[in-house]
Image (cartoon, rainbow over all chains, first blue to last red; front, side):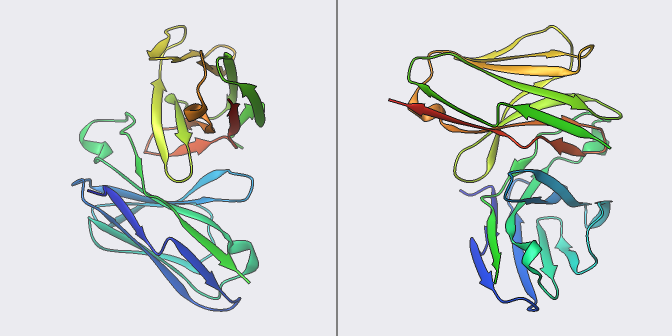
Length: 118
Length: 110
């Protein structure tokens, strides 16, 4: 039983293409995230959605557009891919923070999608 | 700008050794500090530390936070090859925002 799943696991594409990465969680969580892990292993938050509503939007080029069709899914669409987009993208989910106050709710990470832009 | 710095970046030891991993931070709106273990894929949660001086322990792993000096350490005693991984430190700033360090790659040789 995979809690947080992502597809595809590997994605190799040419510069300028448009691609999507899908994420699904079966934990009943209300909040989902996208992180980018670069070659130096820094994990950086990109977006966060709570019940399909965008709540965190870091400084990310607007070529990146998250889409949440329902609270169990958060997809990431990337337009006009660039070399610098090559990284591992992690999806994560957690319980709705706001029902428990400003305390950390454990984030469960997916297996990652390794994107290589040639 | 928020900063989480881990050291060393890489560490190679023999099975049975004890290791100490360091994490220092400069982050606004600090709420808590977390340690994750990342093997080949997804990071998995190890500890959350909110108060200074209180050690958290799980088997051979333990961690402590110093909020005055703004750092945390993760200790692993009697290391095993299965402990080989990247260990990530992250600071929780509230509103579900985590700021991660760059990780320490730990390799345990038999």
